[in-house]
Amino acid sequence: MEADGVIEGFSKSIELHGLKFNKLIGDGDSSVMKRLQEIQPYGPNFFIEKIECTNHLLRNYASKLNTLSKVTKYPLRVRKFIITNIIRFRSDITKSVKHWIKDSKLTKLQKIKEIQKDLANAPFHRLGQHLNCASYFCQPAEETITLELKQQLWHLIQNNFYGKSTKKLPTTTVQENLGKNI
Ligand SMILES: [Zn+2]
Image (cartoon, rainbow, N blue to C red; front, side):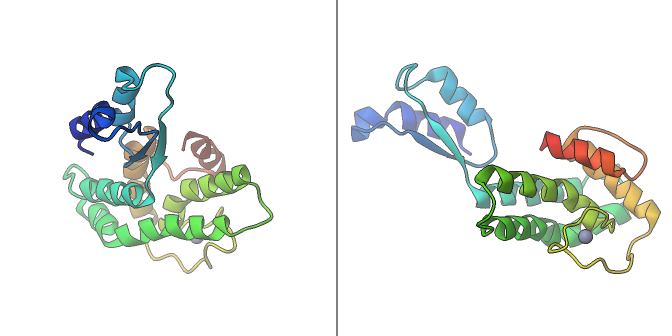
């Protein structure tokens, strides 16, 4: 997001359009919102809500995976696995959201919690570990990648997406902890 342009747009909205903007459509970049909160273009008592744009979030997710696949300190076959599965990583997320959003029995908060669980589990699913996959989410197929590749890939994803490091493929307990961090 062009931060300077957005800040200017908010700062001059009254002068140019006679309007105050009360929403910012975000792209996952928190720096713009932080600057708006510092500048307070309409004073300290005017609340500006941030709405995350799904397309931007998914694009950023895919873009980060793409960047990871180019970091040469990681083994080539791990990077190849990522680059050939970016669409699948991304579709795991949209699949989860589409499933839970239409569940009329759950509250909004419950839906969010279910989606969080699926998001935390998605890398495990993609790595071939289906222990915590919801029944709607997948029909576990035979393992298609080796344990070594799974461990290397998991190490890379965890370091870059969760800020933690482990040498082993994580256990269920670790997955539950991850769920709280997303
Ligand atoms: Zn699965």
